[in-house]
Image 1 (tube, rainbow, N blue to C red):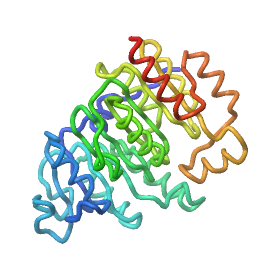
Image 2: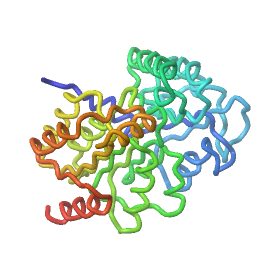
Image 3: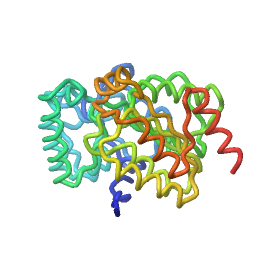
Length: 305
């Protein structure tokens, strides 16, 4: 089965040329202030826009009342706003021609049927407008080589990882933040870091496929709690294999209790572990069973190239 990953649209998410922070805060310690602080302090070279209806200056940036009022192309909009404001902000993003959204907000499929319905409607509206959406309930994205930090994780503020040739995609934001810190402490350079959360649109498979065709990445680390689109994951793994990229995977939620925890965490379906094991073997994926092994295998694969 052919899967079109639409790499040009994913480029607006993983390598944007302009970023707007909706809910931008003057405080560099708040969710809406952290990405704005990182982007400015760490030297992101693209255009940066702050969006806050209160106006004025936000961390030295003139605050726009809306995305549509910016008046120029915005590749990525970071939504650091309450869930109640997301739908109206998506309408604003559609009017502004935004290409990709990073959605931090929680309160969707991970909380039950009502949240699942709201997430489905949100994803359908974004899809109809041609907007790629990562999240909701995610910690964001970092393109390390481009100093692009679309995240509210405190980990880069403690110390940044060096640019490198290992990409990391995680469904779990908590694990993603821990893995980022571990990579930094072990001196592992990263190309791209992304957390996919509830995966209303962009999945681990999309990040995997993007890294498979990225000339700056040799090894791809993936952390999976569950998968709702097996064909998409298999297509991404096949692409990585065909491109000569080494994939190292951790699959959690292998027990009934673990599957329940994964579902409540990122709204994933944990699935039958034996199926994942067979798929990993089919596509030459190196499966790790501990976090230490996860990084040891990735480092060894990088050195062996």
